[in-house]
Image (tube, rainbow, N blue to C red; front, side):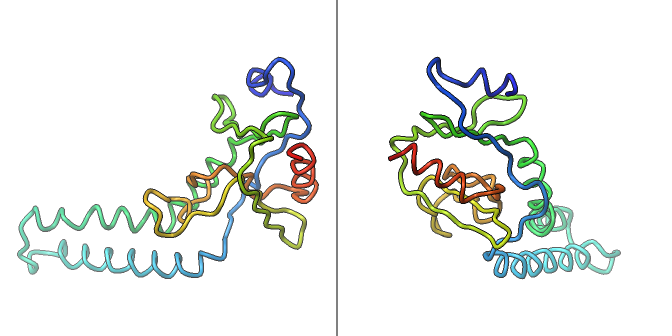
Length: 180
């Protein structure tokens, strides 16, 4: 057991399971909406910036030219950057189930989230055909919740979750037994 996990444990706490999320590209059902939207946004921002910056023919003032750059940056992020950031953040996550808590830790850091296993809100379980899956410790947020960046990137979701773990059903049943 790595020292980072050991430091987070309470005196009478025992680790029952530890794991890591999948580190590759994760495409979720919501991507059927988000990818076309991000391509439309990014494409328009790119077209607009090229049109405004192309040569002297545009005759646009500098503030007008600079106005489109944040939209271009946002388009690059939501089209490509969000996948890279999500993969990078997931590489550094460690998930732990103890006899008392659910822990979501960042490697080389402190506890990101800790949930009392006896006081879990709603458990949501999503299993894939290969046995991997996601366990959410609370209800899914709405697309329109204020500050819900979880629809764009799972690692930014406000609801604690084990994202795309192996043998998800085994972990889900282990948590159910401990919570019971």
